[in-house]
Structures are given as structure tokens and as C-alpha cells.
Amino acid sequence: MREEVVVIVGAGQSGLATAACLTALSVPCLILERDDCVGSMWRNRCYDRVALHLAKQYSELPHAPHPPSAPTYLPKRDFIRYLDDYAARFRLRVSLRRNVESAEYDEAARRWRVVARNAEDGAVEEYAARYLVVASGENDEAAVPEIPGLEGFGGPVVHSSQYRSGSGYQGNAVLVVGCGNSGMEVALDLAEHGARTFIVVRSQLHIVSREIWLVAMFLMKFLPCRLLDALILLLCYFKFGNLSKYGLHRPTKGPMYLKKYTPIYPVVDIGTVTKIKSGEIQVVPSIKSIKDNCVTFSDGRFQNFDAIVLATGYRSSVKKWLKNDACLIGEDGMAKQMFPNHWKGKNRIYCAGLARRGIYGSGEDAQSIANDIASDYQSGK
Ligand SMILES: Cc1cc2nc3c(=O)[nH]c(=O)nc-3n(C[C@H](O)[C@H](O)[C@H](O)COP(=O)(O)OP(=O)(O)OC[C@H]3O[C@@H](n4cnc5c(N)ncnc54)[C@H](O)[C@@H]3O)c2cc1C
Ligand SMILES: *[C@@H]1O[C@H](CO)[C@@H](O)[C@H](O)[C@H]1NC(C)=O
Image (cartoon, rainbow, N blue to C red; front, side, top):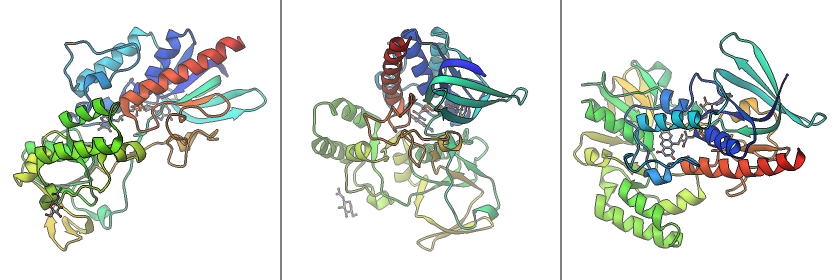
């Protein structure tokens, strides 16, 4: 049994930011990370062309502003380097290749008992921690819905977390399922690599541009939600026109309202709309059935495809290893309580980055958690 003050599960941006804030307050901590690197989501589970959706001033971690020379929208490569530098600068203690298999609160000892498996030798390691921080990410696992006949599809099927780039798909007919940010960007990438690209859009969605969304983020502090939504929709109308003739319908509630009160985040367009208008990417409705290579859609249309990319989302895996939720984690593996009270549970357990608030949210959570732990730790010493 190894004694630790704070154990943090996950070395993504949330875990790193929490560790950095604790280090700045002289609280010792250890990160346990399943993979063999920090920032593994960006390195190993995300396509090549991805760049951050928010401008750099909204995409930085505590104590580490991006330099003026950094691009406004950081490409994946730059953000990975930023995370590596961050871990090195604060000399964070990260134990790599440690998969946390369980964590349970021991009432008698007043400690969190964390069990991790060392992927190098398969050995089981046990930790006793005074504080536990869950930072294992809201996108840890691929989510794949039931699609009738998908198992029998006659070509490759990959999830967007395994998709790297469209090279190799040239001339192929490819169906992208799902129209969130991943689906829209994968479709664009495929079309740019010369694939005949189709995208399944089965629900209503808001599409904004980076510039409009940047203005919106800035005005969020000054304008009430309804007014801001009206402004965003007007700007979107000037930018894109009415997209319903292409099969893209907007929800009745505005994008800022949905971001604030629901898990729905708008699609930030980086060129997909232009390719939909030109017909290079075709929008199709939901899938009715799949037989061999032929996919039939709900409007009766059918078409042969060479490959399918499932951009059907992700989910948290916390429920698999955290034995008692301590009023912190809900059924969906995300923070149970509403923002801004979502980051703290009972018995000195915390969560960072589980409230769907992106990089900015990771930083805010990290700071709140570190301050809370530091004051408790110092008073108990
Ligand atoms: C394609 C894509 C693009 C995105 N673009 C943006 C963007 O532009 N802006 C933005 O703000 N957000 C974006 N996001 C959201 C983004 O995922 C999160 O902002 C961010 O990755 C969350 O960081 P995190 O540290 O909370 O989780 P993660 O980065 O997922 O890190 C969690 C870490 O925990 C580890 N882990 C999980 N379970 C265990 C376990 N049991 N034991 C040990 N280790 C474990 C994982 O290996 C992982 O390294 C994007 C997401 C995707 C998928
Ligand atoms: C867009 O067009 C559809 C029909 O083509 C119409 O029902 C809808 O009201 C239009 N939306 C706007 C904002 O003009």
C-alpha cells in the first residue's frame, strides 16, 4: 500500500491542470494514467486535422498563457506540445501505464483506496489517498448506437476516435454517421481527400462559424442569453443563408441557450457547409437498414458504400471503476450536480473536466479543486 496525499486519475488537460494548481500551492500529488503519455486523447484518439474550436485565450490552462506567436486556433500538434511542456514545467509526478481498476472510500481509515494495474508487468498496485480527483475525461470511450445490419456491413467500419485522415479513401463512397463537430470535420476531411462523402443528419442542429462563436463567447458576459441567441442567428443567416434546403434544420432554441442548459454544443463550421452547398458532401437522413454494402435510408433512398465512419460520440467510463459515487458522479458518468457546484463530492473526492465545459472548464475546475484541497490539507497538517 502506497500512501499519497492526492491521487488524480487521468493525465489529460484536466488532470494536468489540477496537478499544476496543487503543485503551485505546495500540495503533493500523483497522477495515474492508463496510456503511455500525457494528453493521450489528443495523441491517440483524435483525427489529424483537428484544431481547437475556441480561440487560444479561451483554451489555456492555469498559469500558462499561450504566447502571442501561437496561432489563434491551435492545431492538435501545438496543443500536444503545450501539454507536454506544461507537465514538464511543473515537474508533475505522472505514473504512466497505470489503469485504475477501482477506487473505494475506506470509512475506517478515512482514505480512498485506489487499485491500479501496471501495464508493464501486470502487477496490481494499491494506493491510499487522502484526496481523490477524477479526471478521466468525458470522452474516454467510443459510443456506438444500435444500427440495424451494421455488423454485416461489407466494408471497414471505424469510429471517429480511430479515424486519422482521409488518405486511403480516395474514390471510395464513404458514409459518415453523426453530425456533431467530429462528424462534420471527418466528412470535410474525406471530401478533401477525394472520397464521395455522405453524412447522416437525423436531428436538428446549430451551425456557427468560428468567428461568430468567438464574438458570442466575448459577448456572453454582457448580453442576456435570448438577445445573444437572436444576434448569433442573424449573423449565421448572413454567413450561411437558410440551410434547410440542404437537410440542415435549426432547433427552435438558440445555440447559446442549448450550450448553457443542455449537453448540446453547436457545430463550429470550418468548411463543411461550403462542400454541402456544392454537393461534394451529401446530407442523408437516418439509416433504416444495412445489407452487405447497401445502406437504405429512412426516406427510401439506398446507396452502396465502401466504408462507414461512426462519429456517434463518446462517453465517460468513470462508473466502471469508481465504486461509490459520493454524490459526485451521475448515471452517465458525468458530474452529477449542476455547474458551478459540480466539482466536489463527499469524503474529499473531486472531479475535473466532467461538466462539458471544454478546456476552459478544465482550468476552472482545477483551480477550485486545488484551492479547496490546499485549505483542507493545510488546516489538517
Ligand atoms: C475530436 C475532439 C475535438 C475536441 N475539440 C475541443 C476543442 O476544440 N475545445 C475544447 O474545449 N474541447 C474540445 N474537445 C473536448 C475535449 O475532449 C476535452 O476538452 C478534453 O479532452 C478533456 O480533457 P480531460 O483531461 O478532461 O479528458 P481526456 O483528455 O479524455 O483525459 C483523460 C485521461 O484519463 C485517462 N484515463 C481514463 N480512465 C482511466 C483509468 N481508469 N485509469 C487511468 N487513466 C484513465 C485517459 O487515458 C486520458 O488520458 C474535443 C474533443 C474531441 C473528441
Ligand atoms: C428556411 O426555409 C424553410 C423552408 O425552405 C422555412 O420553413 C424556414 O422558415 C426558413 N427559415 C428562415 C430562418 O428563414
